[in-house]
Image 1 (cartoon, rainbow, N blue to C red):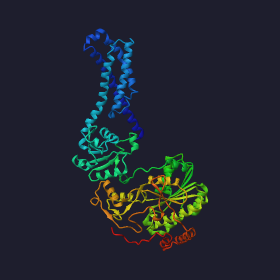
Image 2: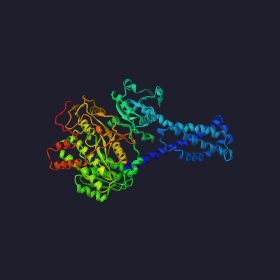
Image 3: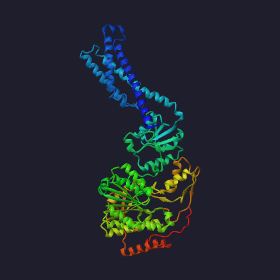
Image 4: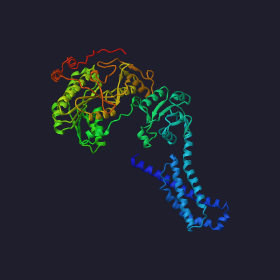
Length: 627
């Protein structure tokens, strides 16, 4: 069925519905009007005829009906969805009838029509009753029909007896698409216990969830507190996981504010809900001040972090945004997305490698960027252990090429995307990123460009991260592989991390290492098991969790800041500054040259050269640590 055919069918259905309501209202208007006159004369038909009121009423009824119908239209009597009728719709009916009664009374006292003065009042009372009954009867009939479906619906618990919970309940009770029968509410407010919302009882608080789920045979739990803190949400989900019920969540608070809580918007709880943190707050004014109307280059702009940088930067109206990436498919994807979302954006997409110094120089000469976000890097720890020279070429000397070009072309701010793996690194990737931070500090000491590095942990859902991997393994039926049952990581969503990167850029001065507060660490084993449960399976029963041992270069936990760097705060509580290390510039340049010669020669001893360069780096042997 085509779009035009669907539109035509919808238009026809609406026209039929309006025509039916119009015919019904014509009947109700005249029945109510006659009943008011008949009762006024105490059911004496003879008296009606003798006084001439009946003939007057017949002459008057056509005009009365037409005027009333005209009044009903602006009162939304034919555009409201009466299956959702409530107080607002009843008020529309009352207002429309009051206008009709007022006009009738004016006509009578003006002598234009011979009818009793009490007639308009009686007519108004009967008309309100008739119109309201006809409209609300539709709801009652639908409710009765839906009650016959209860045996096929899921018995549902709503957590949160506030505005969102009430909206969700109303939607469940009125929607034809609902598969849920809400049988109880849970709310932590003790004053609400025992109360009812739309005939559904508030039975207890979060401590009662498990018991209520069992005694009331709950099949599905829906979380309806969009303003809940991350901590509260996680705590409640942990309790809900002790039941066999499936879990869902209503939309965010911005949708609640728009009244946009529908059956289609209520979704299953996902791992981001379990691991989420309280909303990250940034100063949009500070970010806009240094991005708006600027020419901005993002290297690695097609990657997980780079593409999100481009999305957010595009919202600050830059003069020009240049995406530089070696992977054409990634670059094409973000290019098309930005063209669609920001047709006004002056966008350039260039393909090339940061390892190619001549190509990098060409980009800077052609576009003269004022701000550079350097996100291009090899980041997969195990792969870089097997190809260490490539990690050094791309991460270290790619960064060196871009940083030198930024200095030569008078770039205002250069922001390096770094990682927590650069702290006391045990792998090539982390060590290479630590040298990148050294390059930034070195350049910051002698250039007018403001060089900074921003260091954070893992981002949820990025390319190659554990969440997409676990999802694939669950879909394949398992096993889900975890390297060690005690391994922990810090997590943040990609948009959160990028918004803090942009904020950190506004604080840039000279060679700082900005450290993002990643919140509480997460056990990867818990993450895997939660994902299995959220997929409807039982860990180690339906899907095995298999421990494979730590990989070469992998730590049980990641550190955020080197001990000797210290820490100071910024205006944003989630962004801290590590004190730059003192560098011997001459020795640093000599080691950098030695490292470059070794990796260009694809030396098999590159890890030993790296170990001499980064004092905190220690080569790990290719042995698995027992789980």
